[in-house]
Structure formats: structure tokens, C-alpha cells
Length: 393
Image (cartoon, rainbow, N blue to C red; front, side, top):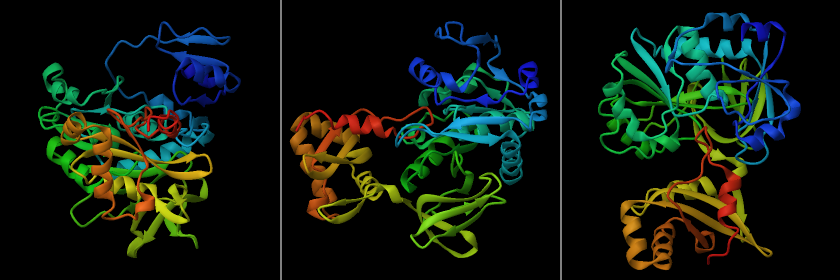
């Protein structure tokens, strides 16, 4: 890799390594570096790098590449992935700030992750940070919650672990999943955790979750550790937050390369603290009434029938209405099996109507084992929309 970078090449991290994704982006790269032997054949040179160790150690020469460009892509959860160009020096500056703020590294500890390195959160936290600090990190992802309790049984080389994760993973933890993992720090990004899920993760994993708010464009923006009655976000070092006339978050940061106007709705408090109110692009109109899809989801998830919910705007002819994809709780599953879909729909709506007007209630429901997410743990909007294309009603 040192020889490749000496050629002055930029590093391109595609959204994933699926064949169609690689094919669609062939014009963006000249050479592929991979440790996958059966990599799909395409009209590009493929350089295979054999990696044998489960855990990788620090490789400091990478930090001599600071003049390099790294090309990443937005998650694509709201449309086609968009290329974002970053200087490696920007990312290193952010990593150093994170290290000074959180200082999660200690001798004998290792970093494990449930998220991909192909997005900025995973790249920063699971790759660049341990490289910079000299900490070991696991090359393979943790795919299932049950794997956490197996860590201490399968590998006694490390005294503790730092977990880099997402709400999609943490929401589905069960009692006992973290009993043997000996986690010293847990980070989450990709979306906000509810107070309920943050408390549950803390109880199971044995330490409070540090949530990080950010985007590919801006880098990290703010962080928080939720406690009862406290859900405010604290800007990261070097980051200045403000609010525009429309109530949206404005970020000025060296990691963003200047000032960035976001679609995040916030309420600004003293000392730069702020409350995140959801995305402006998730405020919709139904029958001329404004509705926050994020607010509907959050309230639905407080029902004892619902484990997770995702709301979308559904168009039928000229009419727009709400569709709700639901991952049911055990109680919800029992109700669905015993009483059927129609009764389950009515029960959830009878709960929602205690907060929302009838015209804003979901008209279409889809029940699924889990809400579709990408490798970063972010919801995939195209997959959610596809659930409502078939007419099951």
C-alpha cells in the first residue's frame, strides 16, 4: 500500500463491495486493493493482499500520506450515493480531537465494530483512531449481538474492548449479550438512540453509550451520553454550531472544510448545547397538515407492541398518506398471530391517536423482522419505499 500511495493515487471507498456497486462506479477508480480471493471479475486490475491475523496493529506510515485524498460516499439512504472528497489530513485532525476528548484507549484493549469502514464513522473510529493510537482492532465485523458474550471465551489476548456500533445493532440487544464482553467504551452513530434504548444498552453492556452526531460532509458534529432528563448534544472540539432562520443546524468546522448548512432541525441552548429535533426533509404534509415522520416513529416505538418503526410517505393516485413499517415486540407478535393483521393495525393506531390527529395515522402497515438498514446501520429509504409498492391492503 505504501508503494501504491507513492504513485500519488487517491483512495476511493465505495459504499459497499457488491458487484453492481463496483460496476456502477468503474469510472471512479483504476486499481482495486482487496483481501477477497474470489473478487468479482471486472475490467480493472485487482491487487490481492493476504491478511491472516484477526486483529491488526498500528501501521504508522499511513499517516505520512496526509496530502492524499480519500473519496467516500454518502449512505444513499435518501437517493443515489454522492461522492465526498476529503483530505486525509482533515480526517487525522478529527481523529486527534476525538482522542483528546474521549481517550478510550488503554493497554491491552482492542477495538471491535459492527459497522463498515466504508463510511466516515467506521473509517474514523474503527480504523484511523486505533491506527493513530497504536491499539489493536478486529478486521472482521461483529454481525450478531450474541457474538459479544463469546469474545472473552474465544480470545483472552485483550483485557477489554471498545465497541464501535450503531442504533440498529444496539436496539436489538438482549439480556446476557454483553455479560462476558468486558466493554470499556461503546460508541454509536448513524441515528439517535431513544432514552429507552440507550438505558437498555447501558444495562446490558455495562457502560454508558457515547452517541456521535455527524455526516460524511461535515465529519463529527457533536456527542452525548444520555441520562434521564438530559438528551442535549455537546459540540465536538473545534466545531461551532448555530441555527439559521428556518431552524436548521449550521456547522462551522475544520472537518467540514468551512460552513455547512444541514437539514437537521435543532433547538439551541446555552453554551452551544442543542436538542436535535429530527430532519427537516422528514417533515411532510398529509391532508394539508404537517407531520414529523421521526416524531411518529419515536412515539410508535413507545408502544408495548412495537420494537422498531419506520414511517414513509405513500402516494396512491393523487392522495398522499402515511405508511408504517413495524418490527414487532414479542407481545406484538402474539397479537399478530392470534388476532391477525387488521386487529394489529387497529391496536397500533389506537395508541397513535392519543397523540396524532386521525388523518395523520398510518393507513398502510408492513410487518417485518427488522427495519432494512445498510452496512452503516442507517435505514435504506429505497428499501422502505419498496415495502409499500405491493398492494397488501
